[in-house]
Amino acid sequence: MTAIFSTLKAAKETVSVTNRNSKMPGSAFSSSAKHCRVGGRLAKLKGSICEGCYALRIQNMRPSVNQGWTANYEKSLDLIANAPAKWVAACVFQILRFANKTGEPYHRWFDAGDLDSVDQLAEICEVARQTPHINHWLPTRELAIVRAYKGAIPSNLVIRLSAPMVDQAPVKGSHTSTVHKLKPAYGHVCPAPSNGGSCGTGDNACRACWSHDVPNVSYKKH
Image (cartoon, rainbow, N blue to C red; front, top):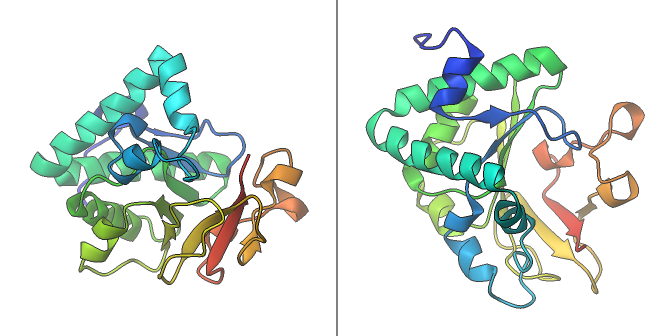
């Protein structure tokens, strides 16, 4: 890969990756929840996992966050259509920089927002290929986009297909996630609620979401 960026500022001006989420290891990529395709419909549906979406609440309450996530969405649309290598390079530069800084080789795609297109998924796969020592996790409700993608999924990327409704069984897929409230959880139960909302560190660390060995992760509805 040709090194396009030499400074963090230049990379972040292209598209922004952050490491500000103190409850999760490593870095994250955020986009506008106001532009979620499936999530936008689910947010209006009672009993769905997107009902009361926290990202939408944050965007509505904090103009600066809304501006940043919307900019990431719009820049990604433009770059992936017109200059995908630049989008990839900006993400790779920042992910590697944050991993080196924190010592946490983990990255989460879309801690707000979701996949927009098959082309975007293809470029995310390219980012993963160019960062082979980073563990990537992509939770998504965009099952149709994932199933329409015909390329190879890098071994360091775990795509978890989310069940759309609370207390619903996992959807069909190698790696999935669910949300439980009144019914028993499926598979691995996320320990964050009993760990201060955090993935934890040291002996208390959980990295199940990034693990190929965990078929389903179930999160408690809160």
